[in-house]
Length: 310
Ligand code: TA6
Image 1 (cartoon, protein in one colour):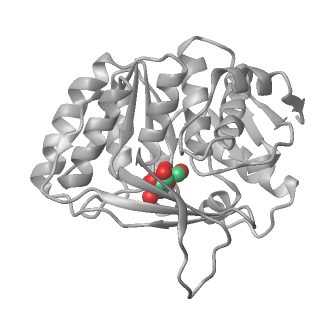
Image 2 (image 1 turned 90 degrees about the vertical axis):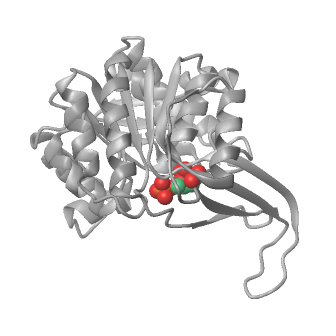
């Protein structure tokens, strides 16, 4: 079973706009509300891949109710903790003409000490039934950046594998706890490493430094250019086919789901990364966030090139 952690879930509101015009009235030609937040996108893709998924985190208010109803419909087991606050809304505005996606992310509700303790108590129990734990996204107010470290420690005490997808100070604070995988993009790698260029050599150098600090798999995601991965003392570049995206939001989350699914099925790290990238690309072919099709994933897997750099 895959346990997904989304401490700051969101109702993802997607607006399709013919041509977005800043400072003017824009009429949405298509609107879609999705039970989102990175970990719930991971959960939804895991379900499409046929995996047994339990989702946990914090949910409250009308948005929390919407999310509970929607995750139940797709067979995601609900292990969320109730909160007083209102779960947030995140906007994704897609400009059809310019093919750009603009996101506006709310900070999320304030979590009380009592709510945090109740979550931790429940998490410590459900971790035992999980095989793989994914921890994704930002933290709501009231939760300190090193909280993911507590979750990683509890998981590792139970001999569970943790895949971490977060950024900024939260990612920095989590590194000493050595999750199995981190997947920073270039900007996130720059923030945590201080590197001053995006040249491949620099990216590889910083990724290797993180690997040497005890992170078994450091995967720097490069969007349409795939990823650079450091694991098992080697450095690899995985190159995807070129596709025309519809909506890229949720591709990183689909990547995590694809990786978790294959890791659970005991595939090699390389095959897990191939499946992960194929899921990330497949997600771009749908307007919904966190959506893939098995046919597209299978097709893209065959087109991904793996180059061993070191
Ligand atoms: O990756 C896409 C997405 O999950 C959106 O669905 C939106 O919920 C956002 O990211 C949340 O990101 P955050 O880093 O705030 O957890």
